[in-house]
Image (cartoon, rainbow over all chains, first blue to last red; front, side):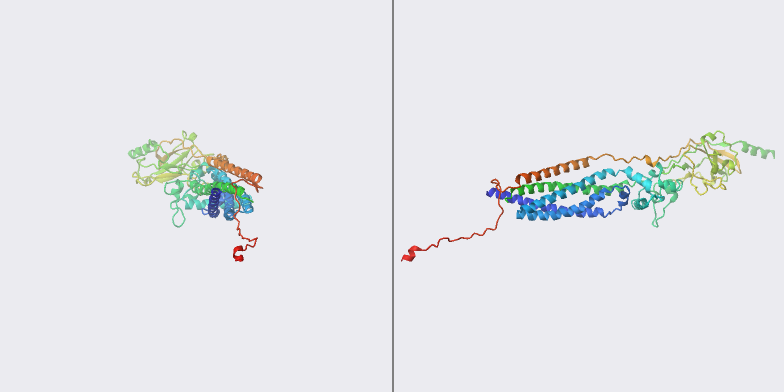
Length: 260
Length: 244
């Protein structure tokens, strides 16, 4: 009897420790998802224009799940120490619901990451950059968002197009229909700018002289932060869920051993 | 007088054909050919003439190359850019004196001629020598022609046909997903399995241990705060002490 008493004490200790880790991870998940939702790189308009911004939905769910995990971990600690069957049953059921939500968030983030290919952004850029004849308000909003985002991206990250400036030459675009090819082989934001914001050498930029125009593509600057966000939400959530799995199994075992 | 006339006649009929072939610039330029412009090497060290001779660029469609007449005047309706290529099959543009093509090429400079860079005069009929954007992908052939007071004195060979870029339709870009990555499949399957195990354990827990009042030896009871009260149910007298 003494030995099983010790065993139960060890299990209690492990469960409390497990719940403490879940609580801390919950806070970390909330913080991480708030950081992603705040869009520090300003890329949200590009996602919004793809009409599929599920990565942001996954981050939003992550905020609430993280907070729920923290609250439930406290409930779990109290329930384990008091060995109260009701508390622990409530804990287990609520944890399973939170588990289901977090699972949805992880899978959504991972799946949507696969959806964001270079071709998607290329087509979106060619269709919406500098689009002036818009069908409705929504279209106008998306076109303005895409144009503004691309302009800032090209200026700040010193890049042009998705794969390079040749994107503007290889494909037709809305930009091409309003800007002549001879004057604008690519947008002027692709030119190297001086301190006042005008091209250092416009003719050199139009010719494509290395040093006067940005010859590398912007895809790395777009996919880097999005990858970080998707993997941050998906894999950190996965790690939390694996840990929670063991804690929940332990709690269920503990619950079944409490004498009513 | 006769002696003076002879060289003049010689000049008029003796066209100096240089073996130089105009070609696209060899510098690494992103915009070497676009869909309406292309960039040529400057004809440096090609002509052996006095510096005030005017060098013109002739741009023609290939079918007009064999029949091109060097005596046609630049700036006339027969060589007007605005009518190219519908009724005019070769136009002349980018005129400059030989002074601007010195033999000595500075090593760090890029010396090129961009054909098609003037968009302001493309529809202006008063500017027939406009260096306007080319109307289609071509192909085009070019040559340089040296004119001294409207008399052709030298020319280069015709270039190889130059074809410009054609833009593909943006609707041809495939945006269907690239398939599922291995990480995402692993993540989904592992999480689903774990969730299924948890649900199964929950069901097992509730069904088998739900009313577990009389459990086995390994169960334990709640630690209760038990106060032990010792009751003396019988008043115990110290008998021997009382008898004495």
